[in-house]
Image (tube, rainbow, N blue to C red; front, side, top):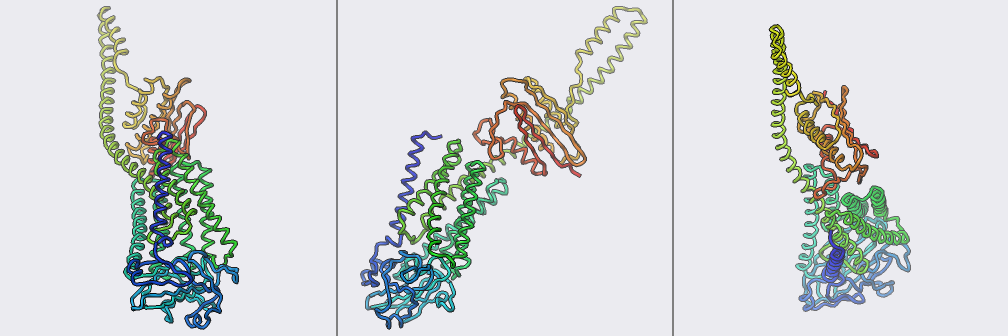
Length: 639
């Protein structure tokens, strides 16, 4: 564990670096801070020098906006200044609410006059998603129609599109937009204007970033499934699902560039996947940090409810009112703040419980909290190439969770290889032990026969001595008979009818006796028990070793171990009881080991037994009493 000073210095350093990262994005990957000339009062004047120096610009400021009007170029020319018009910055307002319209839905027209060089040249205009149907006119020409904005035949459809046109001198851009199906309305994101090459390069970089993130997420998810199958890590499938949802939630740039999609249900599902990603982050955070069940249930439930609420919000956005949209916006801010604080608190909780594996999560938690903070402090942000602040925060958190789980899975895989090698060596040693045990048994049986035959010979000699009245020989034969009964080895106790198990029990019986532990072993192994010798000895060895170690930790009172078995027609039962000091540490239904915790906080022996039983549909029940610890095992017998 770090010292307090180093720990807090690290937190400050991560906060500073993450803040620098978001400030860098704000100034160098932001359409609103991209340093080029901007329209003013609906006019943008560009010279050849302006276009050569800045072949790309984002049209953020000074658009003419005509609320409640679906204008055509002819309407715009005839109306002149008679139509009501305001100047509006893109992103300043995300719906059609105005002095004349109290609902978020309706229609409107955006107009911008470009004064270009007099020599005709080719230009490009990139339009982000415009909600939710529109027509684009360049001067008198209709160049693009996405969906149908006419109220009588309204068809919502939107897509990220780029058009190329030739122009010279005064050129008018007219966007006639209507929306009756989304919580956003009209032109929400700034369009890009400039040379075709500059826009294509920007578009290529943006799509490449999206493809890299999505592809990486899916590949990592597939690898998590692959390793999860081999390591049987309980969180591998959840992490694979998290990677999939992360890839889907970051694919909107790619999807909206390739397909024209209706608002329902795709935009509702897009929001839903964002908050499903948050839900999976919280679930995995709770598992990794070993958060108590009650708090994990509460946090998971809140995320489930919010994900469901966001799906409802997206799917029924056409029915939303302005007060409802504003309340959801505030709820969203509060939710993000709570999630950021919760991630920090749970990670600190885990670190203070000496869970060193969660150190990467504290870095990600601070980064995520910093993302939320700067998202509130710098609201005028629209990424050019990458994602939003919250998207970067969640992506870094996914990587941190992935790193932590990968470490666990790789460590588990390494342990699996190590255990496999240990099992191989154990099998060899066990075979040698069984062979040696059989030789001992044969020698004991031979000694018993020799003892039996020798005593018969002594009786014959004694009879002959009595007939000859030779008292010296009789006395000598009596002494020899007494010496044979006390000196010749007698048959040791047979614990089990299974030679392999009997050899194992002899070892632990002797070890227990040497440490003044009373031990009683009553075992019968049925022939149709489905376990191999290795698996059976692994179960018994782990249980007896844990029982002996628990007894050795007792400082007073009688120390004892009882192991007995029972079987019926279908099931084999095993019960082991041992005394202990009454102290247990338990977390999430798992007992924490009181041994050296270098490799694992939880008892490897118990988990190994549980793993073997799961292969044969067996069960293990643990009953800790005040001073007596009991484990009951049931295993179905083969037919």
